Length: 280
Image (cartoon, rainbow, N blue to C red; front, side, top):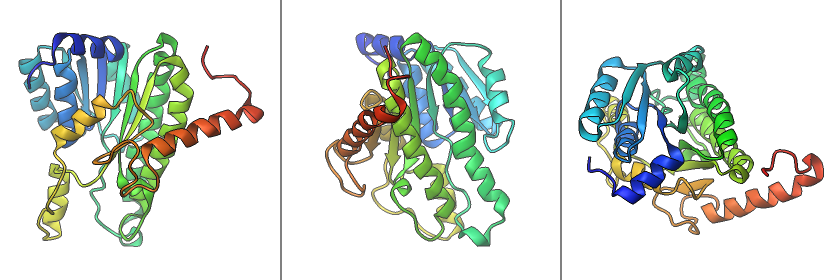
């Protein structure tokens, strides 16, 4: 992984450093995010369930970028995940939180899988992430800088067979990110919900193999996905993969239209909530 040119890297590190937490960092887009963040000079705390692959990514990052990198094997589907993440961060100043863990490994209709699998999916995608956003977001708001990047899916725009819970949690993340962006933008904190289409990750290939299906053509590259997310972090609240800011495509509305809608809601809500919590 090449280092980012000095000025751009220094500005990124100033705004989103000195430490980043990347959840779901052992492979795929999470690994790509971690390497690219590190290449910009930001120290990384990597979170994922599998210790071995996570340690390999951490060693790779230390070797190629020279930053500090901590690997913490934590299952984000467990109720104690947030407490263990706090232990791993150890009071370090977190300027960037990337919630990348959240793929659906089930490939099943809702009733054909035990409810525990869906509760795990909700814990991983919603509860653990919300706790981290609340904790890290408070410190970012106080400092007046930082970033939150939630990696989502086009399933957030609608559901279908075998997607009931997955699309539900992604729709929550979409609306949550829009509201959080509106609340934190006045304080200089960036929030982005990165909407992905099908991306060439080990998790997707494993699921397809289990179903006896070949990988479809046109899969997005994890490196390209990560690069886009980091580049658009300051242009929230939504970035749709493969679409321009004002392009609808597979989305219900364009990112620009959703941004305008959130601003409209923020203005209208003053009649109910007043100006409290809208920055200085």
